Structures are given as C-alpha cells and as structure tokens.
Amino acid sequence: MTHVVVVGAGFAGYHAARRLRRHPDIDVTVLNPTDYFLYLPLLPEVAGGLLDPRRVAVSIPATLPGVDLRLGSATRIDLQRKHVDYRDAEGASGQLPYDVVLLTTGSTTKLLPIPGVTDHAHGFRSIAEALYLRDHVIAQVELAASTTSPAERDARLTFVVVGAGYTGTEVTAQGVRLTDVLLADRPSLRGHRARWILVDTADRVLPGLDARLARTTAQVLGDLRVEILTGTSVAEATSDGVRLSNGTSVSTRTLVWSVGVRPDDLGASLDLPTDRGRLIVDEHLAVPGQPGFWACGDVAAAPDLTRPGRRTAMTAQHAQRQGVRAAANIAASLGHGRVRPYRHRDLGFIVDLGGRDAAANPLGVALSGLPAKTVARGYHLYSLPGNRARTAVEWATQAVLGRSAVGIGLVKAADVPLTSAQPDS
Image (cartoon, rainbow, N blue to C red):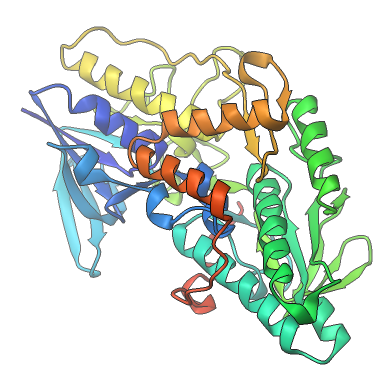
C-alpha cells in the first residue's frame, strides 16, 4: 500500500481524493478542518435565505467511503522526514506520515491596508460567515423598523458590498431580494427600500470575464436598483459608515468584504519557489525537485498551457479539474496509466442573480434570463457531489413558498472576524 495524504478538501482536494480512492493499492488520508466539502458557489443562496446551509456541506465520510478523514489543519510539511504536522479540532498537535503528499489548502480572504476594515467588515468564505450575514441583514431590518430616527433607519437599511466579482455580485443580488421580502412584511417600513451599494476599483462588474456576462449582470443589478460604483474603493471604515475613495461618506452598519482571495500560506512557508505566494508546480502538477510532492488548486501556480507564459487562474473550475488530473498523475506515478499534463478547456461561466435572473456563457454561448437560470441550476446540481435531491427539492419549495426570512442567531460577529484572514502580500 502507498499512503497518500491530501492536505485540504476544497474543490481540488475533495475531487483528488475521490479519484485516488478507486485504486485498492492506494491508502488515502484527507486532512481537513471540517468533515465536509464546502460547495462555495451556492453560499450566496444560504446568505439570502434560499438554501439550508447543510445543502452546501457535502459529507466527506458519506461520499468518500474508504478514505480516512483526519480533522485538523496542517501547520508544516516536513519534506525530508515525509510527514505533515497538524493541529486537530481540539488544538492538539499530531503528525501524519506519508509516501506521497498532495497540497490543496486553497486560499483565504484577501485583505487590503484600509483603516477600519478588519474591525468593521465581514468576509464571505464560510458557512458561518454566510449565516452571520443573513442574520445581520435581518437584524438591521428589524432595528430599522423599530427606530424613530429617519437617519438611523436609512443607515440600517444601507448595505455596502466591496468587490464586484462572482461573490460580490451574487451576494448583492440575493441580498436585495432578501431585504425586499423583509421590508414587505414590516408595516412601519412600507414605502421604504433597502439601499445596496456595490463598490469595485475596476471599470465594470465581473472584471476580467466575458463582457457580455458583465453587461447582463450590470443590467440585472440596475433593475434591482443596486448602486454600482466602479473605479471606487473604501478609504476608511468605521462603526457607523464608510468613506469611499471618491470622497463620499455613506452611513451604514453593514460592510461585506469580497475583494478576492490570496493563496494559503502553507505553500509559501516551505522555502520553495513561489509566484505571488503560490507554490510553483510543473505542467503535471508536481513540485519540481521534490519527489512525491504534488500541489494543485489555488495554492499552486500551474502553467496555463493554453496561454503560454501565464499561470492558471484561482477559480473553482481550475481547482476541481486540477484535483482530478493530479490524482490521475499520482496514480500513474505508482503504475496506473501514464502521467499527462494539465490542460483545460474553458467551459464558460455562470452568475446566479436570484429570482429568474442569471448570466451564463456555456461554451461561449451568451445566455441571460430563464435560459441562463436553467443552465446555472443544472450545472450546480451536476457539480454537487452530494445533497442533489435535497437541494432540488428546496429550490422547488422556495419557488412556491418564497424564501425563508428568519434569523436564528447562531453566529455572532465575534465568531467571524475578518482578522482571521491574512493580509495581502
């Protein structure tokens, strides 16, 4: 038996482990802080009250039988002695020996040196953060409904989202629809509407993606009366508002931080060549000069063979495919088939904007409205490695009964500090 340790169970690690478990002579251990694979693309629907958080949490033991799960976070990889040091769920130290190790620790929220952001903003990369945002939005509406001060009411009904990429646009769209439902049920707020502001330093939403997707997304957000401020950033955040780089001050109690991600620090800590914090790997996803050491996903800087001289982007699509390819290459290095380079084909992108709205370009075909929504839902159900039936039933139920708009108060602000992220390097 060859013992392969997969460090991390995001898109890359989960799919790598699923591929490796096919070989009876490979013993697979996954080291991960949770016992589930988090399907990040549907997290905005959790924040918007559309999905139960359990739908986006796919059980590793239930869907990867035969794989040994070790709950913990890696702190160090000893390449000479071939073991992974980790800290388990209760804080105790442990070691995992390996014959082959695959590093897939992914990425963390990217921070910028802006005064007040770490104290007053909240990120959006976990179930806890999604639940906190949902409860926080509901609480702000309730507090706005009970105040007699117009200024306080308006501040509590103002929501600022920083970052107009996938996460920012989807969170904003779901947030608008959630607050519309909430305000409709509060007699004291009839005639009022929540103000959602989407801020980005780029010149359009979804920068770097297909311009047609961006136009469709901007149109939907405009129809939802979202204020889109491009070429703008946050200059300072306080407990009662933000000051923008254009000099405007906005009174608000909500600042959502979704400016992007940076690679996890474990790869850069190994004193091996990196590119912007990502561990450099070859076209086969192996770490050069380190036998038995592989890496893929956001933590790895893999060459993009379709664009010579460039690296693959930090996306879930790349991470999932790289995980499968890395696993196949690891198996090939152990006698199962032959090693192949990682080469991707762009299948397109989807942006789900709530209701019947979405934007998609599957295989380069631009879609919007209900056709794009159908593609988006179908893609997510196909990509979910578990909970498909429950998710489909929940979508159908919400389509008939509407979204759930009840706060449950499980996650407090102190439980999801933005300071848990790492500063951008």
